[in-house]
Image 1: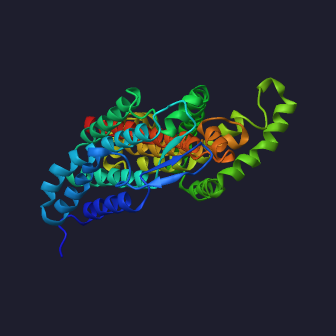
Image 2 (image 1 turned 180 degrees about the vertical axis):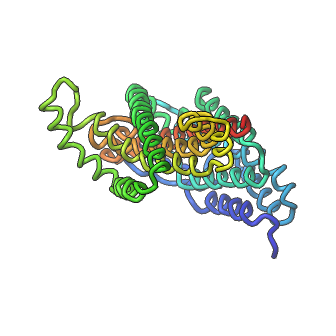
Image 3 (image 1 turned 135 degrees about the vertical axis):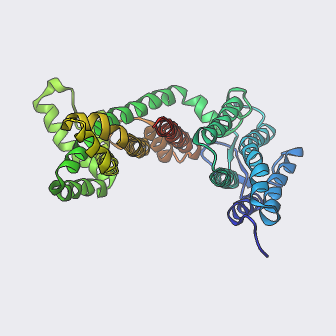
Length: 380
């Protein structure tokens, strides 16, 4: 049997298998118990069970249809699935636990997460095969996100335990969001300046590249928790002897410093790669026009290296969004504080409340930088 689109076919098949073999939702009498899982066909979805025809249709298309037909039908079908699946889970929760203020909890099961994730991968694969411009791909993902936000604001998901945890921890969630953004911004900004300077130094002085990247690679290989811990003692000493700085051994300062150190390697490599790919002919032409070294740097090299530099900045920012989660272990706050609180209390949905926003924030940062890089490349 020959598959016309093997990758989308495998993802669609995996979606169907996860629906029928894993719990779609779980019902528990309270937030501390795991509860019983209900597969797709047992969940109270009513006519919503027919939504499984979407991945079935995608599976048939991947088997028999041409790749273009698979994309034309598969793109809206996959996007619709990403929006419809949470709505169906919210409907099931409303049927199973109608009293929002009660103790009973309906949580999303492994079947939901796996089928939703596989369909998101399928949508990304179809977009890759379609070779759309970046702005069209971003626009489709933004449309899916806006539809999900409309479900949230409309109350369609209020009966899910994840949303009930949010209602119980709304103030802590808002505080964690501000702290997380602050951690990322205050670490990426200095890392961008210092990394760009180190990358320029490595481009101008090739002899320092070996020693420079040896140090940066060593920092990158240190486990994040270990690096956070190593910074506690020296910063505590500094805060004790120079109290005017407002620095302590725990809190925001070691978190920002550690994230900045982790961000140096991708920023330095991105800057060096961008400068190295500048055509030598362009530099020679600028020098022949009488430009000095600084003029060549600002008017020729940096504009041509900007897309690669922004790619390094994108990698750095996305990495910082994820690593900031661990900074909560030293009192820096952020969404990691909610995640670890859920782990200590064995509350899975509270863990997810601290994890899902980080994933969404990383995706949003990635899409934003892709739009900026595409705009810069198009302008050039």
